[in-house]
Amino acid sequence: MKIQTQSRKKFLFVSRWGESLDIANTIYLEGHAVKLYIEDKASKEIGYGFVPKAAKWEKHVDWADIIVFDYTGYGKIASALRAKGKLVLGGTEYTDNLELDRNFGQAELKKHKIKVIPSKEFTTFNDAIHYIENHPSSYVLKPCGETQELKQLLFVGSDEEGLDVIRVLKAYEKSWGNNFGNFQLQRKVKGVEISIAAFFNGNEFIYPINITFEHKKLFPKELGVSTGEMGTSMFWVKDSPIFEATLLKFQHTLAKHHFIGHIDINCIVNGNGIYPLEFTSRFGYPQVLIQRAGINEPLGELFYKLVTRKKFKINTKKGFQVGAFIVVPPFPYDDKKTFNLFSKDAVVVFKKNGKEGVHPMHLKKVNDEWLITGNTGIAVLVTGVGNTMKDAQKMMYNRINNVIINNGYYRTDIGDRWTEDSDKLWSWGLL
Image (cartoon, rainbow, N blue to C red; front, side, top):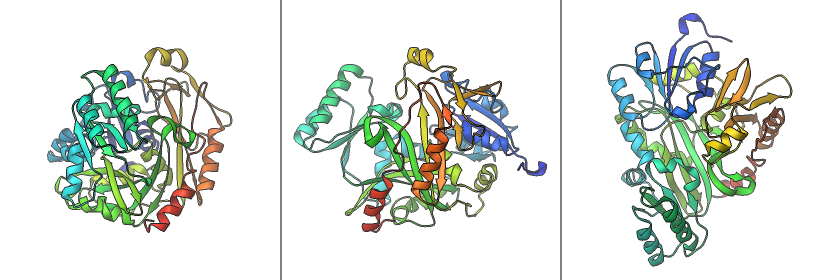
């Protein structure tokens, strides 16, 4: 049902790569006015036909009631606009640094008396290799700064002396030379990987909070290259011991920096404790799109309540939500020739009418057809909901079966980890 005219707001989305298309489209279909700006040149076509586009976002600042920044790196601009009295959903310089500067993020965790996994930052591959040789153990190799956006460069070692990480470092040295930038070696801890996320209204966290399990590898059973994400399962809760031990401790600091938006902390947990890994101080993708499947209230209204610092509870579904990406070549790699050959302007076909639960990602709409654009090969996200994880999975995979994308591929096991993970989390007293 469309909103009443007096409640209609003007939303300006400032997007790095067009990831917030589905959110902008949802708010547009709710009856609000929307403009979407995309910074990345190769992604400019994303969203055409779905929502009105903006060539220069700065020209529309006075037009907008609410400005939404969908990625990290805009914190300084967002804070300046807030200082001028604009309603802004997005980061601050402080929250940008939490995500982009791994050392700063770890230092802030320590400052807030949160236990962290030992890690060390390096600027040269040789120094890192010598360090592992002198301190043999299993390590995770994490790029810092802009290189961390290339998710396939993150490497999780399994050798107990770190020999596999040394081999990867030598390979990176040959292919990257001195252009890799800073990177971090973090001791590997075994356990369940889990994310705790919440919206923040400038003063405090808004409940319920979101518990997320990411599936990062390209193939089922966590095989293949790291992609950033292939799919996610989640649910909403009114409290969580992991939230209390991590994000909640940042409530005062986030309020001090006037943060309004969404923040997530990824952790490894086991019988010995909770170990935060890294922050995502913005919308997570596909996290926010799957959250949308579990939120019962209009998104435009939810965002307006956040930016006007209202205290409220989000109306969410009980049970579980899951989502899986359908991707096309060259995903997860960047290869323009392959994209143009196999994927550019390929049509997303629906066997039966009804696009419910299918969220456009890097698409444009021409004559009501959904066409793949951009250059990374992320076509759609498909979601499902249910009282049990199995119900949610069944709905999602039924919806995936209704979608035909030439050369499309996706994981067939999103949510399967839940049975084992939930047993462990219950036994450790963390659910």
